[in-house]
Length: 73
Image (tube, rainbow, N blue to C red; front, top):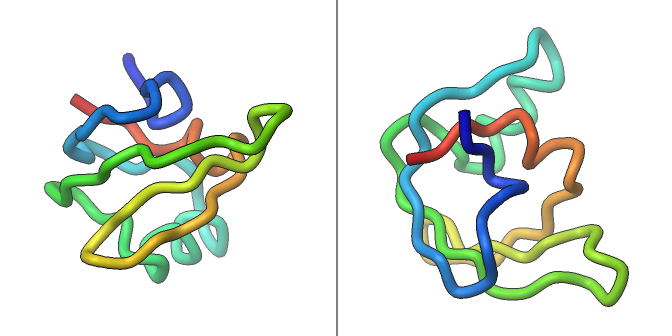
């Protein structure tokens, strides 16, 4: 299983499944990360956390812990 955390800078990936439960999963979905959406990895902070992605036309900073809950293809 490959997650958003494993993607490299410059990659464009498609979200296949969201893991997690309750409020955490809802928060990820509210940010626009839903099944079938394409996400481009833009950049990462110097220590690698957070990462910046472009989703649905806007930039989003995402903690690696949250990115690990997003399965990609």
